[in-house]
Amino acid sequence: NLVPIMAKLEQRELGNTGLKLSSVGFGASPLGNVFGNVSEKDAIDTVREALNLGINFFDTSPYYGDTLSETMLGKCLEAIGVPRDQFIVSTKCGRYGSGFDFSAERVTKSIDESLSRLKLDYVDILQCHDIEFGDLDQIVNETIPALQKLKKEGKIRFIGITGLPMEVFSYVLDRVPIGSVDVVLSYCHYSINDTALEDMLPYFKSKGVGVISASPLAMGLLTERGPPEWHPASPELKSACKAAAAHCKEKGKNISKLSLQFSLSNKEISSVLVGMNSVQQVVENVAAAVELTTVGKDGDILLEVETILQPVKNQSWPSGIQKS
Ligand code: NAD
Ligand code: MG
Image (cartoon, rainbow, N blue to C red; front, side, top):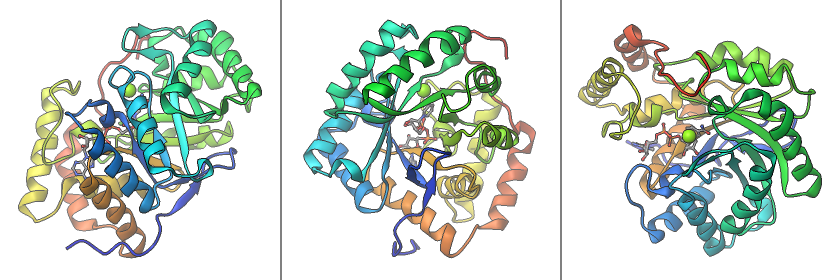
């Protein structure tokens, strides 16, 4: 019983950038075949449907599918022919199929490569990708200053940092001038099983930084299909999520819808990035968002799922070279 999509998707301001992002953002990592193969036609149809339904924010990285995600997204945007001021693109630098390199030289070259794959003159946001794998002092002293130059040159409009452990964000934000980092992208920390991002929101606000939250489905854990084989969660966390998904199904509910609505319900988060690789997923996810603003949350099933996930609440996994 899908609620018909009548309204355009809600948009939310991103920190001090002046950008208005759709509350549901399009995670383009699946276009790099990260969750299984996607044909060019399916990719184009999926991106077109997203734009039609009011999704204006697309996130990619040269790392996803070893540049394939950027190339595919570029082909899609070109094929659809949407005017440049109608969509917002973020890509990343410093993480590649070949490994990590946050040097000024590499990230400066990297944006040109990304722009050429995306077939764009500029990206709206360029983010240092998974900084816990880099030297954080290099991020502060070398990478972010290099990105400031790219901003002056007009190749990027805003600067961001991404990562899994929360402490890398404050390490950097406490050491750079206010206003030099515009955005943080956190992932897997604002979903039913893990809400660690919530505690950091006042801090990010105090730093004038906009917040994007990715992976509301915990990179596939909170789906009926389950996570991909490479998923880093512990067996305990995987089996708790599997039990939660089974419980929802038994009650005639969908774990992915519930999870996305949970992530969307905090308006301090400007956009929730969901990885999508089919028209059906786009339709379902936008419908879930619209239903949340019109009908509201499904509180009973949420409470049941929260109870199932309580033993693994906020359980994460190690990431990066810093201690966490
Ligand atoms: P996700 O939690 O969004 O899960 C994606 C998976 O869920 C895919 O398998 C997708 O096919 C499936 N899915 C999507 N909608 C569904 C639906 N309605 N029903 C059932 N299954 C559905 O995880 P993600 O893709 O890793 O994260 C989203 C995006 O966020 C990424 O594509 C990327 O753009 C961004 N991201 C960035 C970082 C980073 O910068 N370090 C990390 C993680 C994610
Ligand atoms: Mg990643």
